[in-house]
Length: 318
Image (cartoon, rainbow, N blue to C red; front, side, top):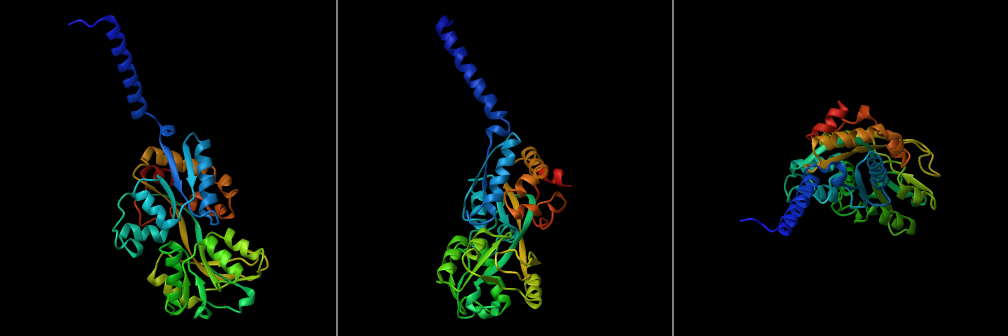
């Protein structure tokens, strides 16, 4: 049966549209895959670093956007649920997710994570006001302590460090407050100490120091040994004197690593392209936050041996 010419023209047009859609869907390239990057709270370090990474990717022909989130634990869950494609996460939290431990014990192992790169150390910082008289973590017994948001990576760090001093939440008045909330509470005097895990200098700590004389509490060698034996992702770190306004003492503490993690929506080709873009432009990322100065290609595989690497990223970094 022969179709009238008008039907032939309509059919041809429909086929052309379908073909065009098919081509765009199958061969869309990086511009068609929007790369959502989960970061952290606006008072922390993830947010400016993630924003700088997004800007670098966009200038390299990709389509990326960074968003403020609840940081490490929330970011892992967003990767798992494919709400985002990339996230900055603490290496200890990623270890827990892959192995179904700590805050992931009930929900189980997260199977779809791949490593992109190790970024910079995240330093564990117990902050007090100078006028509090508190000079040691041991002095936090019976004190009001902002330990981080409930279930966050920072809160796990605070709990583990307190344990190294023989303290539990039964020994303190714990307050589950975020970086920004802990900062406000310490300034207002409604807590005696606030804890953050972030690259230094940390915006929330700088904010406190701009209005009050502060002190960072050191972690002793014995406690660092206890921590590193039980939790191998910790490493000894020194915060230089003068890092924060009005505090001119060098302080020994511990750090975990901030790492860039993807899910299986980032294939090897895109992983290679975005990793190359990041390490070709580390100077631009460093300009966004001082912690970015620690991002180097030479150290980009450190603290990543527990996670399967994205094949494209590994190709760039090896």
